[in-house]
Each structure stands twice: as C-alpha cells, then as structure tokens.
Amino acid sequence: MLSTGAIAGIVIASLVVGAILIFFIVVLAVKMSRKRSGNKVADIEKRLDGAVACVTGGNAGIGRETALELSRRGAHVVLLCRSVSKAEEAAKTIEVETGNTVDVEKLDLASLESVRECAEALRAKLDKVDLLVNNAGIMMCPELKTTEGFEMQFGTNHLGHFLLTELLLPLMERSVYTGFKPRIVILSSSLHKSGKIRWDDINFKRGYDKLEAYNQSKLANVLHAKHLAKRLQGSGITVYSLHPGKK
Ligand SMILES: NC(=O)c1ccc[n+]([C@@H]2O[C@H](COP(=O)([O-])OP(=O)(O)OC[C@H]3O[C@@H](n4cnc5c(N)ncnc54)[C@H](OP(=O)(O)O)[C@@H]3O)[C@@H](O)[C@H]2O)c1
Image: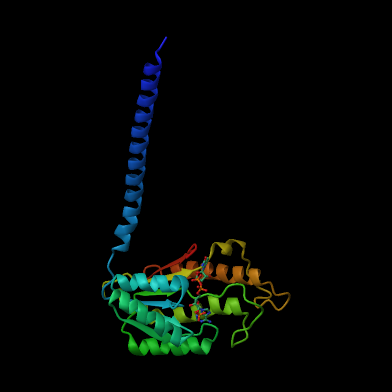
C-alpha cells in the first residue's frame, strides 16, 4: 500500500512530466510552422526592381494588396482602374508605404473603347511590361450590359481583359529581352468549375442568372489562360490563372 504522501508525489511528478511534454510539443509545433511560413517569406523577398507591373482594379481588394506587394518588392506598378480618383488615392498610399513610384491609367473594362485607349496610353509611356495582373472583376451584378452590349460580367471579367492582354502583348514581348520572365496572371475563381459557356446565348438573353453569368465569366478566364499559355509557348511569356481565396 502506498502512503498518501507517495501518491501525492506520483501525481505531482506525472503533472510535471505532462507539462514538460506539452511544452516540447508546443515548441516543436511552433518551429515546424515557422519553417513552413519561412518558405513563404523567402518567396516574398524575391525582388522585382526594374520590373513594370500593370494591375487591373489595383485600387481595391485583392488588386490593391497585389499592387502593394509588387511595389514593396521594387516593381514600378501601374494601376489600371475605372475610377482615376480612387486609383490615385490608392497609388498615393502605396507610394508612401513602399517609397516606389505607382502610376495610374484609366481603364473601364466594360468599354472596349476604353480598353483600347488604355493600351494606347501604356504603349506611349512604357518601354515594356513585365507583369500583367488581370485582377479586376465584377461579381453577381444585376442584369446589365457593357458599352458594346455584352453581358456585364462576361464583358468585364473576360472580354475586356482579353482585348487588353492582346494589345499589351507587344510590350510584354519586349520584356523578354530585358532579362525578366514576363508573366500574365489572370484571376479566376473556384466557381469556374460550375461554369458553362453558353455558346448559343453568351449574353444571357434568355433568362439572366447572375451566378451562372459570373461562373461563365470565370470559366472564360481559365480557358483564356490555358489557350494563351499554349499559344505563347516558347515565347518566354508565361500565363497563369488562379483562384485567389479570400482577401
Ligand atoms: N474576394 C474573393 O473571395 C474572390 C474569390 C474568387 C475570385 N475572386 C476574383 O478576384 C478578383 C478580385 O476580387 P476582389 O474581391 O478583390 O474584388 P473587389 O474588392 O470587388 O475589387 C474589384 C476591383 O475591380 C474593379 N472593377 C470592377 N469593374 C471594373 C471595370 N468595369 N473596369 C475596371 N475595373 C473594374 C473595381 O473597381 P471599383 O473600385 O471602381 O469598383 C475594383 O478595383 C476578381 O476577379 C474576382 O472575381 C475573388
């Protein structure tokens, strides 16, 4: 039979051993998570000095965060936005934070005329574009049409970006010769998986459904990226589409 004192001793010893074990498990877990995020940090530290990065919808949300990070890494960022005043405000705050130049160009993706004017202006002021981030997007809006009469989400999210990309390709081709690896990044969404291209009714003239229209536009983003990646194989320009997750 153990005495009360011995039992108390065993209980205390078990508690101490348990506490030491938990301490080591926590230390190990913290070390492992630091190691994992350490990889991300290494990525983030990749410099982009001398690179020119155009970000559509760079005044808000994911686009603004992307522009901020690119600027922090040293890129000359150009925000392509439909509201010049909002874009200038964002450019100012990013410049203050990073100390690097952030420019603004007007771009309304819901007007192909505006897309052409934007590309023209960029061609006049830039020698090259190293990174094009097709980020701007509109989600589940009421039934609306672009200036040229396309369904708003398909027109903005896909057609406007499609034309912009085509018109900026000559500037991106110039990047290849300056030592950068030019890249086109197209923001899609995991909802593309539910998307269908309504080949016989691309503008949803028969029964508009705002979610279906969004999904169609995001599937079009993925198809655009896949096709362009194939077309540009061997050119030095790479193309990606992605689901960004939440901001
Ligand atoms: N957030 C998410 O969870 C999520 C998930 C999946 C995919 N995405 C995709 O990620 C991208 C960014 O999403 P977000 O959440 O950052 O969106 P957001 O906060 O709503 O920002 C959208 C940006 O697009 C711009 N924009 C809208 N219509 C435009 C037009 N006609 N011409 C030019 N710019 C226009 C907006 O300009 P204004 O400020 O003037 O309105 C804004 O700068 C989108 O393509 C979206 O489909 C987001």
